[in-house]
Length: 321
Image (cartoon, rainbow, N blue to C red; front, side, top):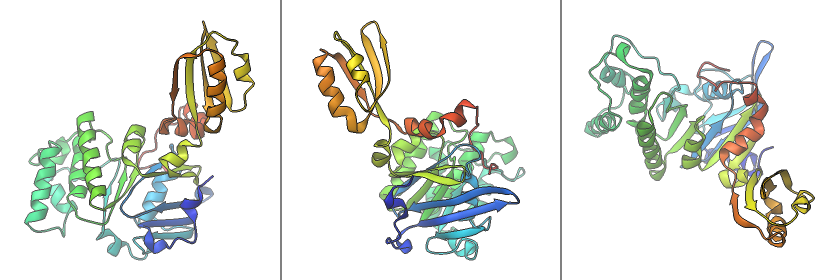
């Protein structure tokens, strides 16, 4: 299910930083993407979620011009990424989820290579500021870096570029919470400057705090797209209360799910549309200590991928298709 705003053909694709419609990609008999659609408006942070094997990394590689789509429409900054990858990459910065660096180069030298073409005192000041913020020692050889420090090199290189679009695939992988907070602040600054970010992440709190909208991919298809407010309407709030009356009347209400009672305290999930009726019924039961917890993005994620997660599916890496 996709909200109309995500695939409205009346919206000019030129008004979107990324426009993907009915994208398919096959690898032999394997269909990695199966009619996938994605819309990334300019000046916003768009979250991109999906479990291992959903096709997320394949989609990102097509956006970067590293893979050619089998069919469908793909535009990045108004251009076909397969035919115009050089022009697009002049206006794009990319952060992979697992950064491989040249082992004999220092971190500073690696950043210089990754930002070749960027010159001038403003760029150097920005680069130095980011190295200080992320506590990166640029004099050490890349072979001595931990995963987190390799990720910092990629982040410093990407964030030091003044470009239109930032594509980030699990950008905080390997970072500690303090560095994650600095990353969050940097992305908010990008948005404040009108830059566009496509953020692929499995840190759901990160997506909730940063993203204006989210697209969820499963089995090569976009299953939900919209703002966080729109997607929360598709999930249920959790109600908890202590009561004196008979709770059996609650179970009969439409929209009430998974009612559990323990020593006079009840807990259940409720559809958003049924909250008003539930509150009226709770009032007749002399409810006390009532709490209603709105759904989080994690609830939405588990709603779609609960079976996958129970089967132990690991998060998708940069090498997964």
